[in-house]
Amino acid sequence: MRTLVRAILVLAALTSSCAAFASQYPTSHQASAPNATTIHQSSVTSLKLIIRHNDEEIGTATGFVLEKNNNHYLVTNRHVVLACAQDQSPTNVGGWICANKIAILHNRLNHLGEWLWVTEDLFDERNNKRWSEHPTLGAAADLVALPLQRADDVKFYPLDLELAKTDIVVGPAEPVSIVGFPFGLVAQGGLPVWKIGTVASDLDVNFRGKPIFLVDTTSRPGMSGSPVYAVRYGAYRAADGSLRSPASGSMKKFLGVYSEQIQAAELGGVWKAEALMALYNSLP
Image (tube, rainbow, N blue to C red; front, top):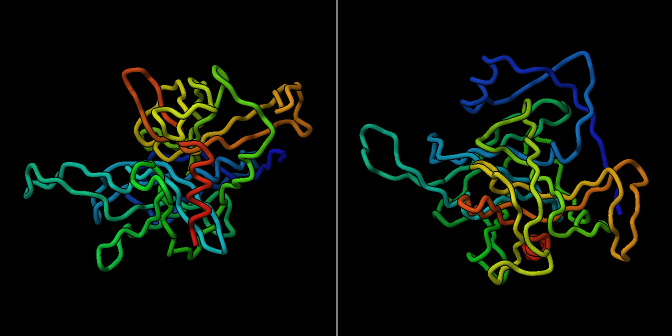
C-alpha cells in the first residue's frame, strides 16, 4: 500500500506565443513563477506524444515510462505506433503516410517545471520494428513498449507497477481517472488533463475475451495510451470488505492503459494492469 507522492513544480501561465511555439516541436518548454504549486506525481508520469512520419505530424497520443534493469521503455498503444494518415503534401494528393517516429514531451533533468521534445525512431536501420508487444497476445493486444535511446537532459518519472497492488476494490459505477492529452491539449506546460470516467463492466470479467474492462467516458483522440487510476480521497473498500480511510489524505491504484473507443456508446476500453505486467515481465 502506497501513499500519494507529491512533487512540487514551479509553473507559470503560458503565453499564446509559447503555445504556438510548442506546437512546432520546440527543443524545450519552460515555465517559471515566484509561487510554488503542488502537482500530483501522476501528472508528470503521463507524457504527451506526437506521432510523426519524418517531420509530418500524423496525430497525438499519450504514453508513460516503465523502468527495468536500468532501461527505460515508453508504453503506449499499438495502434499509436502503427498510425497512418492522408499525406497533406500538394505533390502527393490522395497519398498516405504512416508513423516512423514518435516525439515525446519529456520532463527536463534537474529542472522540474521544464519540458523538452525528444524524438525516437520506431524502426531500426533495417526497417524492423523497435517496440515489443505482449508476449502471448502479440498484435491482438493494443500495448507496446518502445526502448528509449535518447535520454540526454531527460528526467524520467516511471510509473510504479506496484500501484496495481494497492488494496482498493474497484467495481462498476465507481469513478476512475484517465490521465492524458485529449486532442493533444495540455493543462499547462507539459502537464496532462485528468478525465473522469466510471467503470462500466465488472473488472474480473474480460471484455470480448481479452484482459480489458470498460469505462463510461467522453474520450477523445489523443487519450490513447493514458494510464488509468482509481484515486480515493475519502472512504474506500478494501479486499476484506471493510471500509477504510486513507492514512495520508489519499490512495491511488493503477488499473491499466486506456485504449479502445466505442464512440457511439461513449465507452472506452482499458487494458488491465495484468496485461501490462505480462509485457513488462517479457522485457529484457
